[in-house]
Length: 338
Image (cartoon, rainbow, N blue to C red; front, side):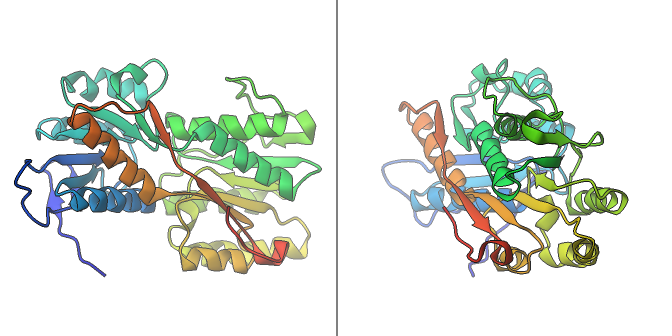
């Protein structure tokens, strides 16, 4: 495995993923950066790797910058302020709190070429960026809803586990889930389900602030230990399974007890590309489905968009990547992707 060097900022920790292999005589190397919500999240690690490798192939560099331990818009704002002082040739931002960032760090963006990736700016702030790379998060949410319908065609009681209420990508995913289960697809139909198409949400849900695996597991185990009324759990991010063994240790015995009582819920998780340990959770029936995104491709496409902008070339308003479905062997007889 290739070991990549590290790079540090005074107010933010970043990973220097790409170093030029050789000097390109006809052009100065360019330097770009992804500003993550949280650099130690598996998705952002993979996106940073994709950006770095694509940049390295063309003699450029791509940094991964962001808060080190968890996602918070004030910490990300500090990182953005530092990044804007670095004289980079382009920045790609995964947005935490659109309105806050627009009123603070992004006011200082000036002529810096800015795009978004993974999580876009909100409609009122979208004019501040040149383009977006990632998922159609509303459609991604609808796919999560389709998986719920696949496992529970008769409907049921739903609980959504999510990040911050200010995260635009997670809010769009929640809206997509609700549209799909409700059977109404007008933009903005995002109120909780209250029996439409025989789907309803528990009063205490969504469970927000799943900022890391510890918080996410506490929220979910507390819910499952106190209620036998949930049929489907959808996590709009991968916090639960960052360390697969920790998920197995904490949830495995609880799910086994619920299996004996025939009240075990279906668990569906949005995730970057699952590794072997995460797929083993599917094999053992501890998760019923993953809906994954192409994390490294998001990083590669982010670099390409920034590079074209730096060269004065046109770019599309959005570049979207594919998703893949992984299903549990015990429930489906086969595990595949799409």
